[in-house]
Every structure is written in C-alpha cells, then in structure tokens.
Length: 365
Image (cartoon, rainbow, N blue to C red):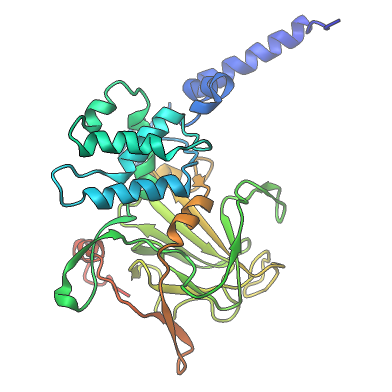
C-alpha cells in the first residue's frame, strides 16, 4: 500500500517549487520536467547595469552545459573547411548549434548522418541555416552558447615565410605541447574537499614535471600568481572577453614563461608555463598536490557580473581537449635559459587587432 504524503509535506513542496519558479522560472521548470532541455535560454531577473555589467542587459545566458562530443566537433569542422571559399560557406559552430537544438544539448547518441543531412542540404543549396532553424525555438540559445565556447578556435592566420600567405583552419591548440605524454579522463564535477567540499570545475591532464603548457587561444594574461587552491596559475582572457582559460598547479620555482606578466598578449600555441603539482597550501611555492598534472579550466562570461562569484559558468573540457589534441604546438628547449619555445610561429590577426585598440604600453609576447 502506498502511503500518501501528508498535507504539510505537500504544502512545503509546493512552496519550494513556487520559490524556485519565482527566482528562475524557465531554468527550474525545464530541469524538473524536461532534463534534456536544461540548456535552454536562461535570463537574469535582476538588473546588471552599473560598473559590474558588461552590456547592461538583463537577458544574458546564465548557464551552459557543454556536452558536444569531439567527433561532432571534428565532423562540423571538416564541413567548415570543405565549404570555405565557396559560395556556400558553413559555420561549423552553427552546425553544432542546430544539432544542439535537435538533441536538447545531449550529444550522447550523436550520429554523423545527422550532421551530413544538414550540411549537404546547405552545400547543395537546398536550404540555408536560416531556413533550417526558422522553427527551432532554442537554436538562438545554442548558437550563442556554442559560439561562446568555440568562437576563437577556427579562423584566419599566417605562418611566417611562404610569402605570409593567409591560412584558414584550426588555430587553437591543445594545452599540452607536442611530444609530451599525458593521460586524462572525464573528471568534471567530481568532488574536491581542500578548504571546503566543492565540485571540480576543470579538466585534469596528468603528465611529467616541466611539460610545456600551451596557450589554447590567443588572448591577454588577466591573472598570474599564487592561489591556495590552484598553486601557481595563469588566467588568460580571450580578446572577445567571452572565454577565461585557467591553467593551474604549475611547476614549483619555475612556473611560467619568464616574459609573462599580467597584461601580456599571447598567441595561441605559445609556451606559457610548465606542469607541476603546486597548490592546496596557504604558503606560496609549495608542492601539496599528490599527482603531477595540469588543471585546465574554461569559464564562459556573457556579462562581467559572471566573472567572479555565484554566477560563474565553468564547462567540461574533456571533449574539447580530445578535439584539440589534433593540433599540438611543437616546442624546443633553450639550454641557456632552460625555457621552452614554440618551433613554428603563427601570426594571429586578432592579436594585432587587439593591440591596436590598446594603449601603447601593451606588450605582445
């Protein structure tokens, strides 16, 4: 016999639901009744105008669960490359956003045939992205969210020599230098207890002391120094300010490229630091992490009010790391300085564009 809940319990439950609905109606209703649509647009109900607001808007995205697989990313990327410089260009991120809307953000059962169907319609001029997404209620959300994650990965760049001919393709790199072994697994959200019990909001990549750590995307150094949790760490912001890359537990005594300082500009593929196991200590320069590894994190920022505090959005980087493993920066050691440097330089036009908008004191590394 099933025992009916008491009237008191029913009232309490209803009150909790009402409170959740008043705070964030779309988020909570979807999480309760439509778990596959938890990535639908989430709007802030509070004004963000003033010094903390980036745009002053109140409808910026508040949460992203990024579950796109590396296979889906690679398939979409290949279509982007195939269609580049044709009269039917395809934005790879928009392709992923269409499938995101179709799958409710869950790529667990991704099929390449789904991608093929969409891309071939565009390539054969049977339809356009605008036509394909006209009736997709959540496509605008996935398109904005996925562009926030992947917006700086593909584009134009130049390689010195060969008449500086413009190239187009993947210009983001794995955070681990080429030729250096590492292991990883999907550990996003696992439990951590140092300081207080919390979720692991990053991706751990285990390797050897001194392994060169690479800038995934071009940007500027927003923070550099010691943190009791992350040890020696570097925070790099993308030029569009939507991505904040966090590299932590860097090497004791020699954590960074010597030329780096807060405000330095870096080009994707540059050596920025070295793997270690510092952190979990209030005292600086202490190895208190048991396993040598890089903590690689990616925070999304749709409004500056989300940069620090309860509104932070961190996403799983496991599939991103798998996708980026196809592009690893080759490095060489300078025995005189003990520094590692990239072998193949790359000219990213976004670095020059950003520098031109800054004060003359901005330094490019």
